[in-house]
Length: 412
Image 1 (cartoon, rainbow, N blue to C red):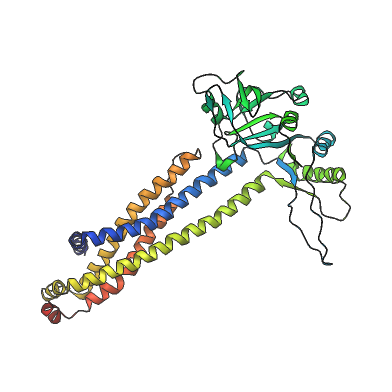
Image 2: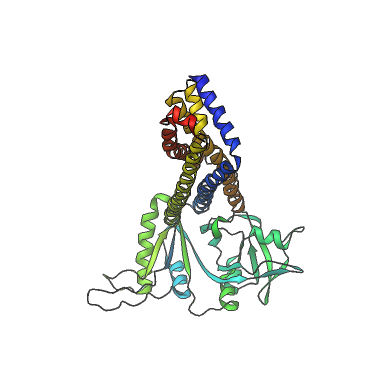
């Protein structure tokens, strides 16, 4: 039995070599489907890992108070509810000063998302986020300083022209020198670099590597925006007290915002892990879509392979007749064609897995994640290739096994 199986494998490989061009084209179609499947799913795994690590660095004891969604709701009376106003600077500062629960509170705002930082002849791309922050922001945001120091309360109060930069900015502007105590241009102003953050990886834009941080008061003065909003981040001293901390924060913020009793809060309290979970849930839909795309491509490959196998049966009718006349059973003929289809699929699948692994890890490298070997997706791809081979080979193999040896020998 083992020798017969090996002979069928050799016969399948000989047949593939005899129709090399068609076999290669079919293998490439299969490889494209597997590449799409493994490549996209490996990339999604890398992004998920990056999101999890970035949000976990903020800690399970952190939550934020932010603007409520600006959607317009209609009540049962058909009246439009008012839009919830943005959190103002005075409201944010009032909350920070009046919040008494054992926790660290930070206030921040986005100054600009299109800044270009310059140092002498070096400059960044015009896509740097600049945030106005207070002295507590780095702690509540899960940032660590690689070198330098944080802002002092006095520097925040008086709006000092100082900046803390992310690692990517430091590498771009100061490739061969220490960034500390150097002056960089942000917009029309000059800012003294007092700190450089540790690298966190890009993580789909949720890290500080391409961000710059200036004092909150300075951001309000030199980067004015109409109707700006401010973000509050709260880090409780103990994770088990987080729900209590959120409850007290909600009560205080409702008082500050003058939300009427019985009505919804005009703001949202969001745990840091809730944001991560929401993004990961969205990624799960992309995973499903990628899987469907890969399966559709493989279905097309199966149809193409079945066509090739049917043509092969027709072209090799006389050969089948000779083999049957010399003692080959219908089972042997059927197995030969099945194995041939499976071998083509597995060769195409191996190429697709290799290409998908390369593409996925290019994405992983770009977002700062180490080399990933998605064994689960690779095994799934191999299983799918085996299934496609069987699916596309069953009918041609059955047709070949049913050929009459006498009629086959007469075939021209």
